[in-house]
Length: 219
Image (cartoon, rainbow, N blue to C red):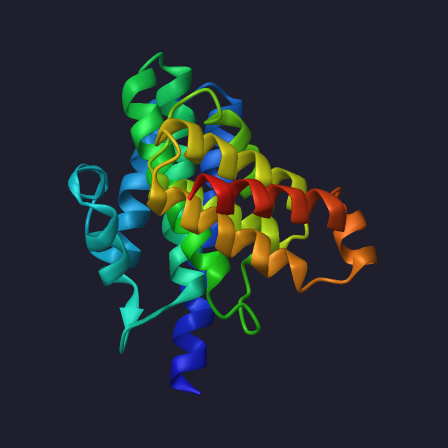
């Protein structure tokens, strides 16, 4: 009961802060919105924006793990607050920092999506993932993030987009054996799907078999 009340209180604080951030942004009060983000990060995670911006992705994930397992709701809270910070930085013309923070946010969202979402209260924020992927599409992303994007597209049955992301990785890495092996694993996974499921994901079994054959020959 105590744990449930603490979780409810945390959710309430987060949602209240998020509403305030949106209100300030709509009024053009970007500095005030950043202050709310900073204070909320301190209240929930005991660290402000300055520290969050300097920590590695692994450090951030360690902050929201219990016995090695990610707390999905906390991960989403962290990701959403960083997403809002990136949005404000972009409005202020600070594009380099905005990209860096949004990339952190996307990586956190993807980690959260990979986790156990059965008892997650904030999963409606997952709708931001594809928007962020589109916003960051003009940049070269780390392979680790691109691989999580592929996993996300597979889980959401968008197999054509998973394939597009795979070929970006293959081209960026000059069709190295490691990336080819990742591609082979993807196509072998897709071959286990039935024809209707593949078609719904905008790929045919023939396309999957052909791509798999090409990659095996390249390997």
